[in-house]
Length: 260
Image (cartoon, rainbow, N blue to C red; front, side, top):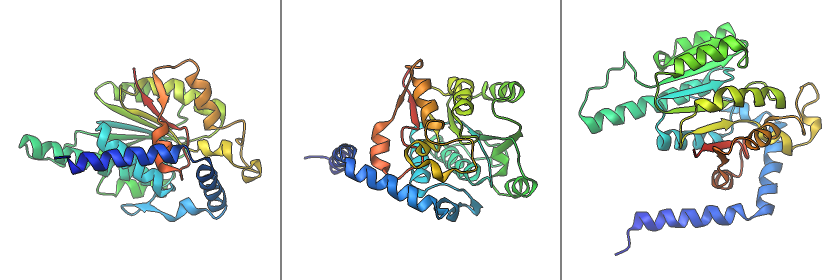
């Protein structure tokens, strides 16, 4: 008898494969992101009470990846209101709980095993206070400074040394040079089969007029940095299946899986 779970999983694989071939649907998805971004659509969502400034599809992708990869450290550049820190810390709490259920150990909330490390050049006091007051705060550490400054990179590298499975999210300054520097600094910390996720690669696919007061735009953005980085880093590959599954995302070509 065929396993219904296996059958469903195969159906999903076939569905994602067909979605990846649908150029019209992909263009429709980009148009949706473009038009909804003009209305600040991503500002409408929160995670456990904290504004997250992400598209729901990318939020779902993050929880899927965290569940699959099971990282014990998530490094994030760009904090804003801290919603992503909180969401990821909650997922890590769930992983610790599930590990305890499987092992028969007792979960000690005061001594969390898994952690989230956030870096931002300007952590505003009201955002820091909100994160520090959140129930997930004991899993979260924040560093203030440029994510590509030597001292910050050194501190992050030191903190990462005690962890076995690391996932990285890059979502700060979106210029080509800055993101490429972040990739060189933090992608080496990503462990095999985990991910380095580069947000806002969608900038390459939408009109330059959307960024009148920004340093970045088409030709100078996270996606151009990703493609430049991959020219010399065959240990990473773009997860095109995830792109096809999401369709609506601010990170097309930005989900980088470490394969070696």
